Amino acid sequence: MASPRLKREQSFDFEEAISAQEAVGSASASYSPSGGAFGISPPESSPRDGRKRRKDRTSWVNHTFTPHFDGHLWRKYGQKNIKDSAFPRLYYRCSYRDDRQCLASKLVQQENDDDPPTFKVTYTYEHTCNSMPVPTPDVVAEPPATGDAYLLRFGSAAGHGDTQQMDQRERQQHHTAVRRPFVMLSFDSNRNLHEQPAFPSDQPAAAAAAASPSFTPPPRALPPPPPPSTMNGGDDLFSTWDPFRYGLNDDHAQIGGHIYLPDNCNVGDDNYC
DNA sequence: CCGATTTGACCCCC
DNA sequence: GGGGGTCAAATCGG
Image (tube, rainbow, N blue to C red; front, side):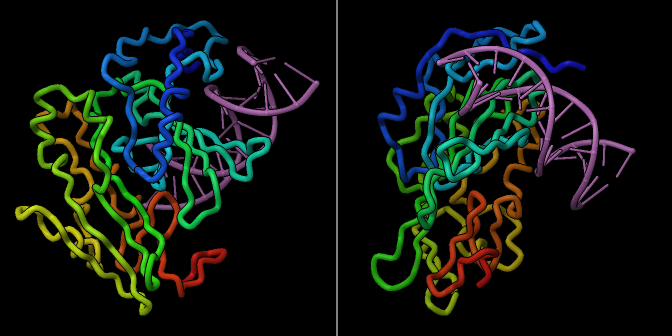
């Protein structure tokens, strides 16, 4: 069966506008501003309309250390080596593309080989699958200023573009999520993970959970899944927060396919420590 | 067996 | 014509 083909949409150059902001360092997904691309025409099935260049479509760019932390469930559908780029470009589309005719897709491309590396994430179309975008943590990996410990800051940035598209009800229900819990995780030279919790008083010890060998629930520093009442059958959104998907375990924090390790670890071919 | 990922091929835009 | 986005068959893994 032929996949739905995308109709050419009026161009709106979010990419230019948002790239100018150079939001490097924030892991938050910069979803399209209010009044964005909702109301997209349903795909029409002209056999060849699907393979349009991105310029034809609404897109916006986010620079992040954590390209997978955006609160949605993505399915990879392609990878290409890009000319003049040392890193391949990864193509993802919404996992609900077929189920809910959700056209959202994203491109992830590593931008550099820094430690941690940054990624350019280009989102195309907004989610229409009702798997409501969850405020993403602002995860900032800070190189060791003193000593040899990396700091992972969750919720450190001042603003979330993605809250703009929440309606009032959602905003209310995301109240806890936008209170910006703050935690710093650091490794010392003995590979011990330390957390410096700075949660609001009612926040559970998420960092302790992150350091726990079992680590079942996602840390509250990460955006919680939306409450069931707001989910339109989107209960499986929880899979987005599978701790193994994000590589969070007792030994290291792996975000966006990259493992944050203490300096004395061998960050070599297999990140062996 | 089913869903996700990989990867080469196809196709469109620049 | 080349680069880049997508498709879809093959493969993998649970």
